[in-house]
Image 1 (tube, one colour):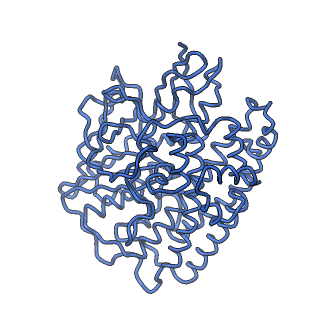
Image 2 (cartoon, one colour):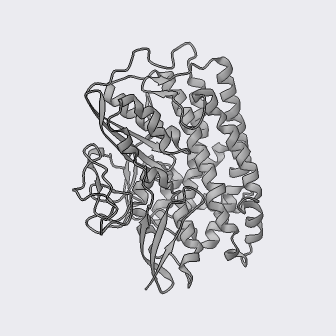
Image 3 (tube, helix red, strand yellow):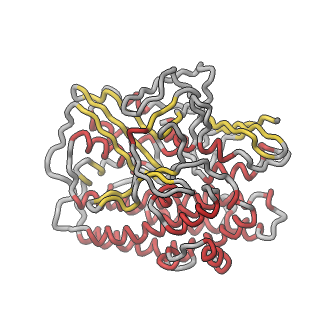
Length: 482
């Protein structure tokens, strides 16, 4: 076998290396390394609990609202605070805008440019793909990036700025929106829907969400002239619908919680199995192949983060989170599968696993569903009521957990407080789940398993299929190593 190190993957947070063992033109074994360490969990220890609202969002500049939501949920659980309904709605709108911005950026800027590479120069579809999706010069990014910028004006209205806003609090959001702000929100969302339907879907959101079978999706791909049907045709031609097969359970903490429950239900599912409830107490982080001091696999509420760069078996600063001892895949495809979205469930049942295609498609399905949800949330705002609970928040001794969904998947914060100071703060990010190293039983993480069997030809380091598989998970390594 041949050993090759691929990386950095520098379109987003490039601190990622993938070591491949290859033979007979395919990947035989993969090890995923996160070579960056940051230490946010230690920075938070010894500080006042409310400092988490300031420090934790700085873990990442592209999912800052998600980190705020997890910190808010943990502090809300710790303090017993009940948020104002308007504050929950406003936070959901801001969170949805950030997650959609992530999905669009990933699709156009990070993922699709690989199809414009010279590796595909002989394909009939390549000239159109290169014109549309080439990095920096492609027409798609020139169209989408202004749409993304306009979408993020939502943050200015609700949170004052983005990223790293202090507007998100256990009691709700700090700015009470007036009629003018609500009208501007509605206008931004109307503009976004029109652009998303014209550029990405090629059909109205409602028509796209009516597609529930693989056959109907194939017909949509064949007839459509927008970017998503364009991708689906390329994916079928390049075998992306058979590439990067996920190893097993899909997990979601549930997303966009409100008085009536979560918009996207939490739970656990497998392509061949139905929905099952999720017990977060069954989560444990394995340290056996991380650059961490030795210790047993522990639930994050009891875990520690103590780096050891000399650990002989270590090959990543990422721990290995497991649920009931098993690696699980998280992300938009997991959220939609767990929630029972018909098209995603139909494709998973047909393919028997997640693939590059379903991961990309699920992000657009989710965006379409959020377009409708946000329209309802904007209408539901009651401008006569408060946006933040009036009572002062008190943080006594105790513990809390904040389980939310970032664009890339399940995000958890666990806090313990003693003597008005943070005694322990642990974070498990989506990319930590998907890009985890092996555990004590030798089980590879989800990406490590998904890469096995990927065709690499005689130049593993340049294999574009490896890029497709890795980028289909949308890595964010600063969140992983927090």
